[in-house]
Length: 320
Image 1 (tube, rainbow, N blue to C red):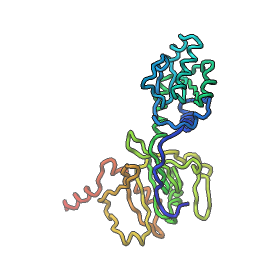
Image 2 (cartoon, one colour):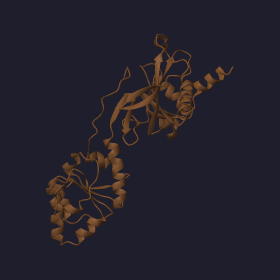
Image 3 (cartoon, rainbow, N blue to C red):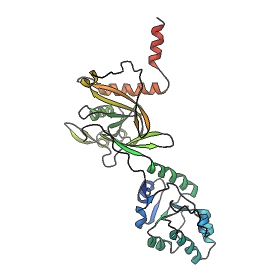
Image 4 (cartoon, one colour):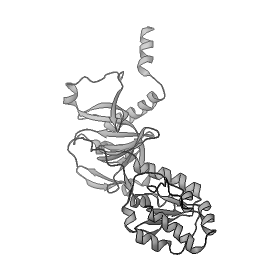
């Protein structure tokens, strides 16, 4: 476990066909027909292409860097061709660098195409989804894979419906606070190391746990626990939008710093170009961090809804 809070470098956002197949297998209902070296191909353009014109022999501006989707229109056209011409047209896609063909609408792969794909080191996929459904869902899967990501040493919990990440030096009680929050009916997202991805369309951050450590927590004096086994699956949240960062600082450090006593100043922490609201909570013996974090989350929800308690109190005091 990390001794100090720090952010890792932004991870490379390019992804391979293997990533696409594994990540989109459930949502896209894909079946891998032929794999080969094409699975390691890096997808440089995260979108699909309908190779209608290319199947007629027109290859100028052919978007070979994208997975090629063979939909109903392409199927009807291919079935109008003689078998040898049909195979030649599909073979020509591989000759022009196509590395993936996706046959939509549950259609069968024409004879000879799998062999041609294996020789070219390309990928063949099948899906029962209609073409428009596959293209739409594939765009979401690719966007998630291409999204900028990073990792931050911090514990993230869903509290009162919002995503709260606890950061601070080791030994200040991040995991213990998260454990208390779970027992109050909240859910753990990630313990100690939080993976963050940026949704570029909404400019928001989403937190999740590393796949290898998901569901596990380290509690000093107890050891490693499986949260789902101890508290049930409702104590786990697989991914949550990050709404608030709470920085835990030692009381001795807080005494030498200028803490905002009334909450008038709104601080933010920039992560992947997104400014996330941040507050600092001093830690000392006897302070109920679980209660403080829950209160901070509820207060943040009110502030986000437009409620300004400082201005309200100021107006009341001026009216005295």
